[in-house]
Length: 412
Image 1 (cartoon, rainbow, N blue to C red):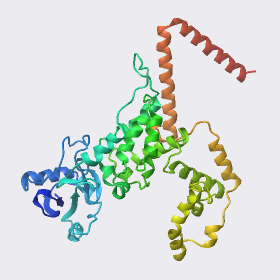
Image 2: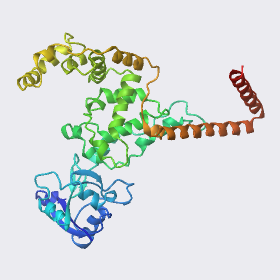
Image 3: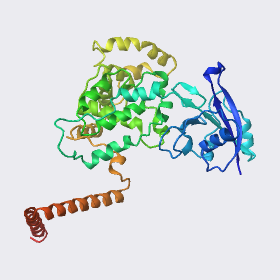
Image 4: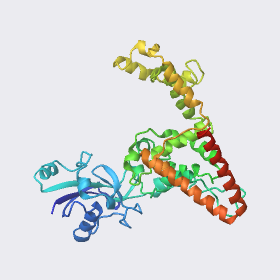
């Protein structure tokens, strides 16, 4: 039976003492969960260890902690998996003794800490009300009905419901909030969990205030444009919600569908990327800031360019850029690149690759899914024809006409 050394981060604010590491060794199979190990230590050795848990089935989300530096659900993380992540990240994290013991096959250290970006109440328990739930309330997390409300149920296209199902999978564990770098720098940032929840209603055709929701989150300085694309929330999420992807989709809807020209310059900044690459073929970064504010000589751009001078001077001094690259366009986009831009911009409808919506990753599976959809439609038509004989006659006549036309085209 392998041995694992749990180093649990302990903190009791009422004691007035600083946080410290508490070490305990357990003998358990590597397929047992980290939560099982913590509860065994609490039940058999130290009953004062504080941890929040409930279902132990990766459903309630209450046992979120950091294990060897990575957030996750303690009930859904095997001891062996947590041990393979390494031995913590902080200067006061577990010492090198764990590495030597692991090499000798005796035991492995697992550092267990409370989640980040939230106040610690005690030991591994954090105050989610002050950060997580407050931000969830910020995005109006309920459906606003369209008027008039239909007498019967809403009929929602299948694609729309599967789309929002991804964000509905969120169990509010707070793992994404724990590792969000934007929230670490700016605690006021609405955050990945709340913005993923916002897309759940922006992507729902039954909601009546898509434009209002998007404008609110676009105009907020700590809204959708405060995300820095660090991908941490995607790595942290135990349910595949992909919060950063939902934030990017909120941006696309705000800018491309509703054309919200926000005061944070997010809309113009994203369009500046497209303009820059269309012109140069690759990103010419020295023009990006000016393009985001309307060009080098635009009144909005002048103060921003002056403010960026220290950064530019530092880059020149360290050889990160040269005057030639700074002032001249060394690249021009070939006609093929411009043709691709024109073709994509000319589409009436934006096409997004979202495997969660289609549900099929391989081409064969996609064809199978298409056949299944056609069969469902045929069954629905059959049911409708059974209820209405006249509709059935019309359908039969139409199908016969199509068949005759097809035969004539094949055998002129």
